[in-house]
Image (cartoon, rainbow, N blue to C red; front, side):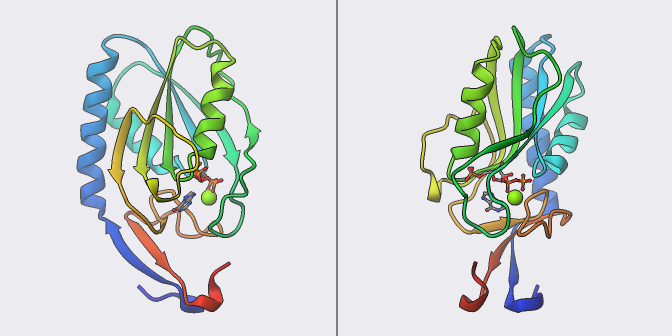
Length: 183
Ligand SMILES: O=P(O)(O)OC[C@H]1O[C@H](OP(=O)(O)OP(=O)(O)O)[C@H](O)[C@@H]1O
Ligand code: HPA
Ligand SMILES: [Mg+2]
């Protein structure tokens, strides 16, 4: 797919692959949770498609909540500074919290969130990430449930954005830039 400004999108994960994999993740989570009622905590905005597909397929009694973190803004580089724009509203003390995230890249966002939530006294924190992309990892993060390992590239679609665009694509694509467009 060729777009304005010499940006091209190259398919990485198809909607069919996503549907099948999200079903498998939901089955693993259900098996591990037994009859425990977890808090599903989505990280906005990127989680929105993964979260709703996973929650639908999980089919169990769960509390639903969201945080909104931001560290990228425009462009493809993490600022390294994570801001919590919206905090959890459900009381997390003593609860099993499943963080639902679209991507772990440098790991800075997830590291910050886990450390922040740990101070709120949950029983345990589990991480469920749609994509693990280790190429640019700057800090170690343990991810309990991974949808797809993607070795490299800047990805968009299925919630992931470039400058707020392409989040609503049903599959995942790698963005390739002409040198003059890279910010
Ligand atoms: O591992 P990292 O390098 O920290 O990157 C991962 C984070 O970056 C993106 O969020 P972003 O700040 O772009 O907000 P968004 O979800 O609203 O797009 C993504 O949704 C993750 O939360
Ligand atoms: O590859 C990515 N795509 C979109 N947003 C991101 N945030 C961290 N890495 C990415
Ligand atoms: Mg983003």
